[in-house]
Amino acid sequence: MGRGAREDAEFRRKTVGCLDGLFGFALALSRDRAVAEDLVQEAYVRALKAARRPLASDDVRPWLFTILHNVWRNERRRRVAEPLDDMPEILETAVAIQPSAEEDLDRGAASDSIRRAIDDLPETYREVVALRFSEGFSYQQIAATLDCPAGTVMSRLARARALIKKAVLATRVPRVVGGRT
Amino acid sequence: MTDCDAARRSLLAYLDGELVGDERQAVEAHLQGCAACRRSYAAEEGLTAAIEAALPRPAAPEALRARVARLAERSGSRTRRYVTFAATLAAAVALLAIGIGRFRASEARRNDLVSVAIDSHLRYAGGRLPLEVRSEKTDDVSRFFEGRVPFHLTLPDYPVGPGEQKFYTLEGGRLVSLRDDYAAYVAYRMETRPISLLVASAARAQPSGRETVTSGRLTFHLDSVAGLNVITWVDNGLAYALVSDLSVNGDKSCLVCHGSPSERKKIPGFSAPRI
Image 1 (spheres, rainbow over the protein chains, first blue to last red):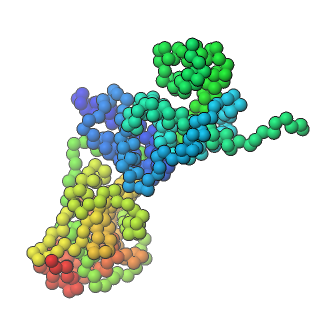
Image 2: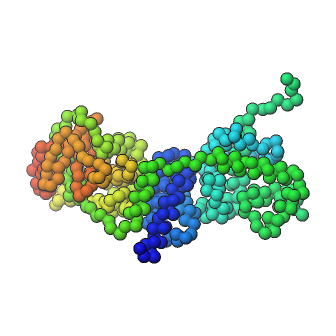
């Protein structure tokens, strides 16, 4: 096997190795398994046909996720538009929340409500949450994937966290303070 | 010394490992001396851990995994299978168009090719199957399928004879799933009536029907299911299913399939629109 063929085989191996992550991202964007499958398949079609691509030695994930995100953007244009930055009044409230020790979240109990809260986030927040917390992308990698400034990524992540926290706290049963048993 | 407001603004970036050098050191120094900001940091750290734990990490479905593996395999191969089917498609569309009788409703068990073709046709006709490429140009639609399906598809233009008008128009296409792989769905319209063509690898789909009509080297399988007429056949390693609510009659199909425009005019009941 020549050098070019080895490079090609390694590139394909690494590309296919991103499948689960890509599917999770596609699911976070579309919230529909069938649509997510189509998005991933289309992303791979484009990636594997691409004339310009990263080397196998590079991290191919940001490149692949960018392709998938572009596929999704094209796809959503054909669908009924979901407002990208909806719920402004909720955002203003959410970002004003200051964390405190009392609001520290019980992970186990909050897991379901966190999952629901993430699912209810507007798309612009769901996508940064998925790339940051599922894939561990840096702000710069997320910015490159979503084609936006790193500062925007940072503020979207902060707002997403605030919204998640607000949603989780809203599901808590109020504690009785100062009561006697 | 960084104040609490400045530290809070940088806290998430610090938590996410985005700060370096002086900025990082400034936040660390502030946290060491400020119990309130340490509590905030601990809360945000807890939230990060909770989000990471709560986020679903779904594995890709096996069928998708198999399709992606095949795509990757094909991308490494220089050989491609080029298949054209111009005359056959035109013939089958014409077969649906000659409307005289109807086949009896089939009691036979439908196979995947027929089921998926009918399902896709009904969804498209009902506005529930959006096309991924919309064009009347065969080149545009053929290009869309390039690399997306495990075969090469060149959609034909209907061979129009002198004084004859093309009696169907291409509307576009999309991918549909068929047995863990993608098949090509192509939508046509004859006046106001939708016609659907499904193309798949013959390794994954076989034709079926209550009646067969052999024409040259091809055998067309004809059936009627739920008021829809279906013609399936295999040619050059690909399986085709053509679905429409147009009436069909197999009696004259041989001429329709492989006849010239002048021969088609001799078929009773068949008349393509004139220019």
